[in-house]
Length: 407
Image 1 (cartoon, rainbow, N blue to C red):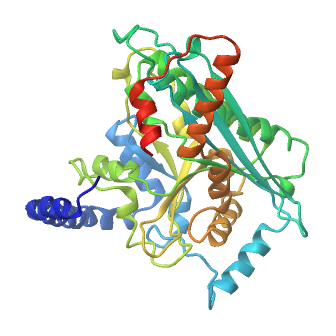
Image 2 (cartoon, one colour; image 1 turned 30 degrees about the vertical axis):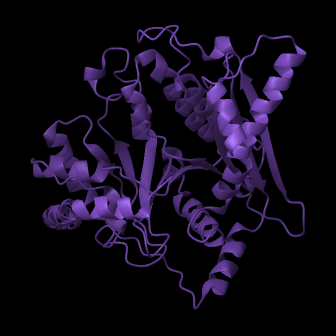
């Protein structure tokens, strides 16, 4: 039970620390802004030449020719509306007869309350053809149970026999999300480009988190993203990775390389917050060149070069709400090279108009895939009945039984 008075008292005791943090953020932002102002007046060619002279293989980002088309790193959105009704009219016209697909997942990790380990992954997807009339959409899901042998640890952490960690189920969920997107893209292989769907991945293609894993555990993540990007290009189906709240620092790190000195610990989104002044404004596209544990040689021979696909991912920051920093939108490089980037980004903007600042398709896929606390209890009840029917020696921790009875 949370005691409000105790929370307030503890917060008050550390208010100076919170204030100091805010002041330091402002200070760092001003320092970074000075470096950024110099960069904003340079051409893409000059920036690329300076990066080449630095001899840094992974400088964070590389500029694209869009830098020369932008007004000091701002590409203004040409539309404006009197009210949200006008915005929705534009959005619906933009999306009309242009399908959208989003995939998301949820999971049920194994619990120590059951003597027999069991887990599950649920993948939900949403397809909207954006046609007239009713019934032009699909909401569906896949549900996969994981048995004890599929959950068991490999023992390389010295934890063999000590339980069933969540890394396997986290990994499987990510892989299944990518696989489902690929299978849905394949269905549109022979469709004309103007009828191809826009596919959403809720998250980034730049999987730095996998660099914290051992190579054999990181490999399925890397292969899943490589296959996903390849599917998009093979079937010529536009694909975006959408990151609403992003702390990526790829452009900031590029600034540091160009300035040849450490840069402030601020995100790209904060860097561009004051640049993208109006709704729909975006930055030029950049190519990702992030230095992380997957891309850097220090990760070992098995990892070096394993994420060359990073350089095949273009990204931009787009102003989609007035009260938060811009969102990061990633896409395979082929979309930019084919001249489809602005059309794709208009569809992203339109989805965010319908979703009030967040892509409606992703929001809906999340609602399809989500596993609630009530769903969790239902799943374990079904599993208990299954175990009893099959004569399995299942026991349940008394603590878990007590919790259910109390609640």
